[in-house]
Amino acid sequence: MQGLWRRLTTAIIFVIIMVAGHYTGVYTFSLLFFIIAAGCLWEFFGLTLDLHTRRDKIRKTIAVALGLMPFVLVTTLSLLKINDPENFITLSSLLFSPFVFTIFIYELYSHSKEPFANIAFMILGLFYIGVPFALVDFIAYDGDSFNSRIVLGLLVLTWVNDTGAYLTGSMIGKTPLFPRISPNKTWEGSSGGFITTLVFGYLLSLVFTEIPLAQWMGLAVIVAIFGSLGDLVESMLKRSVNVKDSGNLLPGHGGLLDRFDAFIFVVPFATAYLLYLR
Image (cartoon, rainbow, N blue to C red; front, side, top):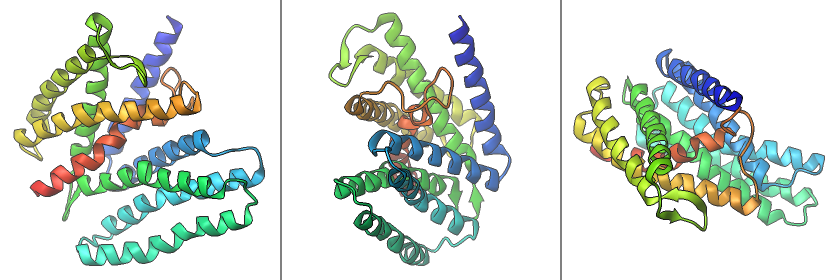
């Protein structure tokens, strides 16, 4: 019972912070996702990089900074309203490319036994976590408009999909979905999550009117499919390094990466979908 209350308390505080971050302006929104992205990157590199020496800790800090670069660049340019695609790509390339190659220079002097494995993990973190969080701004900013509620809606759909799958699977789940990676997930649970997400997609369209019903239903389908895959991908990561949770920042819920694994995987597909429609 104590564990349940701790889990519930963490969830309530977490939801309050997330909602406040979406409704208190562009700077708070950007700060919120900067912190989340940094936390997810910190946990990811804690799982994948060796942390035995001072050099290893410096490598982890550099890796987190590298992973945050796309988010920092996109957010800065968005706040400065540099929305022209040609200028955006030019400025991003000039600022970002030199920083990427500093990790090669660091490994040259780090005396690591596996320098290119370290480089590979740092670049993987950049694309797996850093780029999706940078794409959040492409959803929130549409020209001069700031539509943070679309991002909040995506988060809600992601949590609803996860909760619906868990509850349905707990009650009637019998057929394993992916036993090699996650033995507890079932086809029945995934179906329940899919249906629940579609229902909430409709409900969100009644409250968040920035985009029409058809687009919310499209996003619900994307979340139901790719959110589940994102959860499996993180389970594959944790199984490969033999850990149960990515961290312990959220009592009763694990780490930030455990809570945002599905959202991270959803964002690239949701961004492509919304930008195509725009």
